[in-house]
Image 1 (cartoon, rainbow, N blue to C red):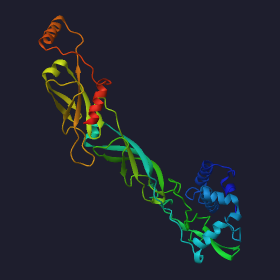
Image 2 (image 1 turned 30 degrees about the horizontal axis):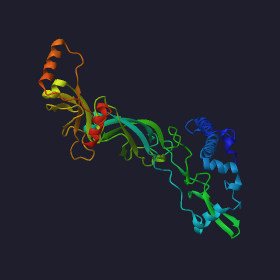
Image 3 (image 1 turned 60 degrees about the vertical axis):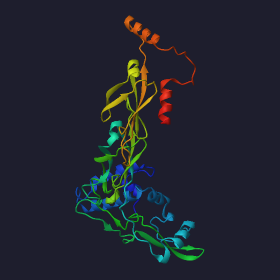
Length: 370
């Protein structure tokens, strides 16, 4: 049997990329569609078989170990604990294997991150996300074969996917079973791999996935999209796609569960006399009713103007922390009016109270204690 490394023209220490590159070069020269000669057809089979073995890490390791590892040997080789377990608990029971394995496998799951604006979280949104993933090869429709061809039964294992051999042991002669080195356990070989996907049945491509981002999601949550992951080899089922949500920072509004939080600055006169302010919110205008005598760090709650709850049941509230702004530059007339106002009220002496780390500490404590 020809040496697989010599067939591909690579060194025994060649990397997987070097082996793949050598195979593709020879396949382009020897493919029956390009070179119809019988000699080229035979060499193409040898090249394909060599690549099948050396491109699989397990098969390559067994091949490098030689016939004593059971690769291509037909005689009685060494017998170890692995053979004993395989004999009594595996496929060797009754001298029959479990059958060839399928080329089709489920594709891998994928995890991506999607960023959404805070206002999109209020009612939910739709997003079109471009995904770089594996899709079914359009040329071969996942069959792994060049158009007009199909897999053929392996002439070594005759379609069983495994090789049985008799070995001597302390218990006498027993039959063991191992995957066929020619077909790698599939029971069939592909003499004419698809030129587009190199016999994998899938290719890398970009596609767009439409995602329904529900209301109420928060940073760190994951959305599960069944069947939107990578296509499996040989037309196998798709894996799943998981999207990890990140809600972007907003300059005005922040979030506490399903409630929205904001701070509203008002003038001292509005705090004394009261007023009503209409301001833009995340989903339209919001009317804030300021009662006379309101203090800094007081909370005004606007019902049902927060975020729609993740599993339904209405919306949270908008909680507005008040900051009373004291004027620092007064003209003479304004100063005289303030003095008259102060003189008209009963004097109240300043006194100590519990220490607070400014307005934001008060707001934080009140937000948390509501």
